[in-house]
Image (cartoon, rainbow, N blue to C red; front, top):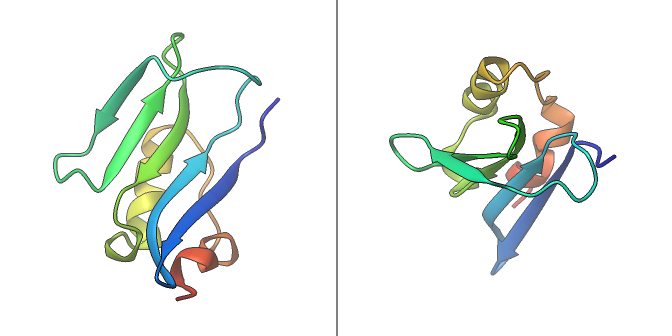
Length: 90
């Protein structure tokens, strides 16, 4: 089982992209991606239709509240301020 975790990629000391891995079976792969209309958030879905991750294409442009609204829509628990700190730590 892959547990929920946030991975942040930095470029020149600033967050460039981030990926929130949602809890899912180890080895489960993305079968479909659905971007938000503005492209800032992209949800990856497994073949079963279950969300397995959220790509944050411009982390500094996505407030935690917006990410948490999306997580609520997906039936996922919110991300804490503490867990989102790596995005803000530049």
